[in-house]
Length: 418
Image (cartoon, rainbow, N blue to C red; front, side, top):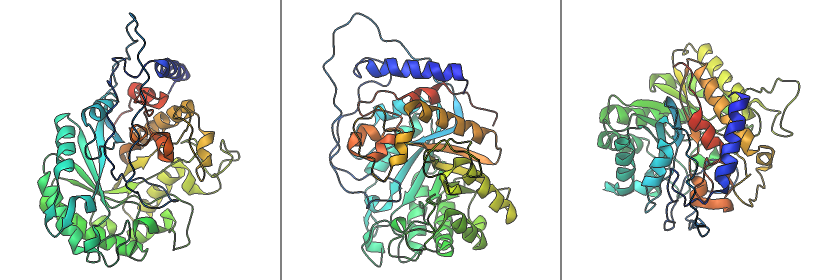
């Protein structure tokens, strides 16, 4: 992004941050607080998501004024760019969809936690997934659904995050899911970060076992909707390779390729989080911007993309695209007082840097024809969790629903040639 444009973005963002969030700039008022719910949140440390009441956004009293708010320029269309949003049950949907529309992106990702949909054999509760899919479809988005977390009744042990004991259960569910949303959902990411124990409880961390699950899930999708794109769940980038907490993502992807994952999917999922490192920086550079998390290639957006591409070429699968199904940079600035314990690197990323890194990362995807759609994580978790949860540092919105510089930078970003 040109320096002049970035400065403009920061100035606009600073101005908007001072405005009353109830002023009539799109999106309108923040949604009301929902009842307690579960939201999937990625990361390495911490326990599984818990049912925690969402704090209501605090909206200060509006000061009467005769001046109209400064309008934002219209969003620049970006058909291959995407963002992940979160619409829990009983959460008002329209403001979130307007926020997504305001970015100009062509894709939206939502995550389906299987255990919240099927409460027993063929005992389904589709209500929230139906309304989210229909709302996004009517708004004209291409939709990616990530599917994870099997119900306890399908599992050998009641532990968070793992696959079913019988992988054929995943095939059955994916066939029903894809068939239900045939023609409205364009792509499915099968599972999430399967190299993490937290996402694979009750089973052995093993890329070959994950490929067996993918094979079943992909078969289900093909039967339910032959036109849908099937993507393997992106490994987590942790720098850990102890085989207990996690398997290194490069080691895990190599194991996936050796187990024949390319026979079952249309694209490889990747989660190239950059920690506090700029997107075009590499572990091999002589100097680093960040003071931590710069000693391993998994901490670098660029290295993850290039290493995955190298592995695909090594196994003769360079024709397979890499879909960046999650990425982003945290910045607690402007969110409120946050506990960044375990996530201290986020304190090294200002809101202006967050905006710059995100736009540059999308540009880097445009520059690589083998990178498919990219999905920024995330749009709106700060409006759900507020400053009480570290994951809000990744949000494009502040807790009151006002825009962060990254939101405006992405709204105005010009995509490269597809």
